Image 1 (cartoon, chains in turn blue, green):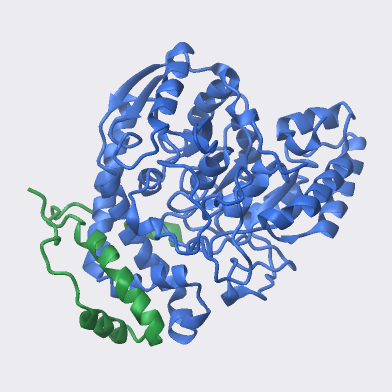
Image 2 (cartoon, rainbow over the protein chains, first blue to last red):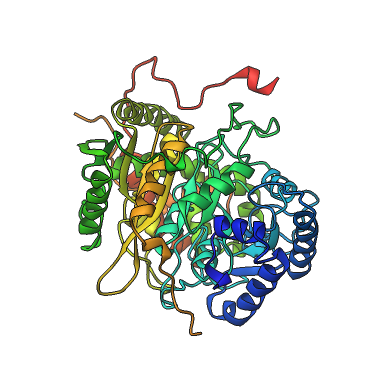
Length: 464
Length: 69
């Protein structure tokens, strides 16, 4: 049994049968991290003592028959913008290099209550925005499928650590695609839940009205298990929605027979997409049809429109977060973050308001589509992982994003692997989105697809 | 026909310096040059935002006082 690539569901079953223990699993993963992460830099800080203590507690509770839930005894990592009491939370930035929070973020409180095992704090683009950067106190994470490539961002550490078999679960954040992008680049699963589904309290902000916290794992089934523990109303988060949390795993196996899926025209097949992406998406559509879903084309506004709207809102809100530091210590920002924050100083109030009014129109356009379709499908990324070069052009301004449409609308969207590029051998990704709070629908489609394919069971070799 | 501001001429380097100064930010010349190279791409995005919405077309997040009670 290769512990490195066991899923949360498999670990739960192994714990129940007493075939493995949380301490055994934690030690094995810590050893693997020690052996290989020097080549990948997915961790900023490994919390070995915390992990072993939490694993021992979980083991004792499980042995006594006191199971807290699906994350009990499961190792996980946190993107390093998620606050952890007594453990530095840096944002991968010189600006917060020595910041030690007093309190846990709400999601950390929930994961601790659920018996999770914190393995460490993971690399991110600077404050989940500026990257990939090579001028920060820590190097950027690398992609386990090819170390000369990046793992996407901004949840770069979670993506790399999951693909490398260091962890079965991690928390990422997604404002414009920062969970789904790394999931696509690394061949794993990443869910941006509905805006307001998971508390943002204690997570460093990026764009107040578009910040989402979500699970990153290696399968859709595992997404459902982790989401179960972190989802729910938090009255201290003004964006949190007070609506019931369903049993996400309960409907996973219902399949897609009779479901209506809309394949968005002109997104994954627009100019600039990787040549292997179109055939991979077409094959995924064939699989879903063979499972009983109907798939029809649907037309929405262009990626350019969604990207312009999202970026204008984001830079205005981002500036308000960093204004004080930018006035007093601009030299301490990484180059990319500084040049992404500065535009917010030049945005006029009427530009921001116009973008917000457009956001209403674009979101309504998607709601109209969700009245016709149970879910929308497209690619999780338009290309493969970028080469790790310090002078790469800034993706934010050079190409429209295929993840931003669902950031604008705040609906749940999940990226899962759907193939590999022929020449480079890098993961390709399918993205599934549904109406607000229809995470169950997204997960049903993804799980059905993963039951019929094995892309999510392929893993990179780390030179073992 | 779409009503946006993309017909306006791009800001000049002097315009950009003036806007940054008006925002109260002081940059080294190296950082200013980096930003002068970056801003036009953001400016183009902002100017493509459509204008001329109807009076009843509200922003995506409206003020909801009960949320703050």
